[in-house]
Length: 118
Ligand SMILES: [Cu+2]
Image (cartoon, rainbow, N blue to C red; front, side):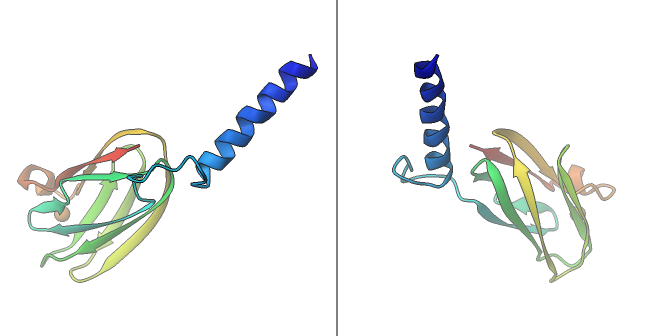
């Protein structure tokens, strides 16, 4: 019983160290912060990646019309005006997420991208 309990403690400690980027940190770890650009008609980079957990996503509208920014089934940033940037903090689980602008016609025109959460 005592042995079983300490096994659980060691596992918990390893998880905390990994989360803090301690000795188990990999050199090519995905970032906790990412900047994306929107314009007519693209979201760049087309293939982005971030680390799982709390991440900060900044979206810059470099276009000439208003856009919005959606991480499908996670979060929406409404109304990003030209030359404006907006940031959001989200807690992401590992997986692949679709990014898009949902204003009428914008997705169809090419405003989509993929976010890989590792
Ligand atoms: Cu748009």
